[in-house]
Figure (cartoon, rainbow, N blue to C red):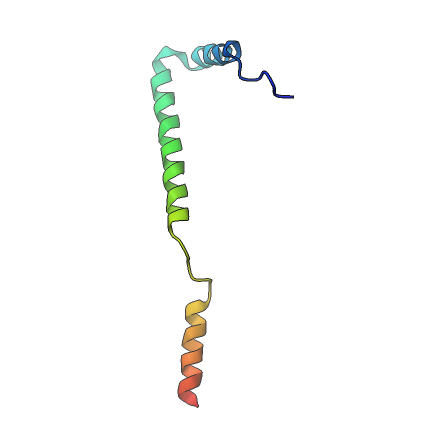
Length: 73
């Protein structure tokens, strides 16, 4: 279905349409904004995956309750 989607002629047509829509003056700004967006996405993705193991919600509360019940006994 998408066999010949990204042929060089298609990419040139897409570039031409983008150039017509944004104009040559805005093109660097658009490229910089896209680059920043991709960079922020990668940074947030790394932060989420680099966190490693996190405690499941309520773990601290369970520990506190178990300590208080042990002290009462």
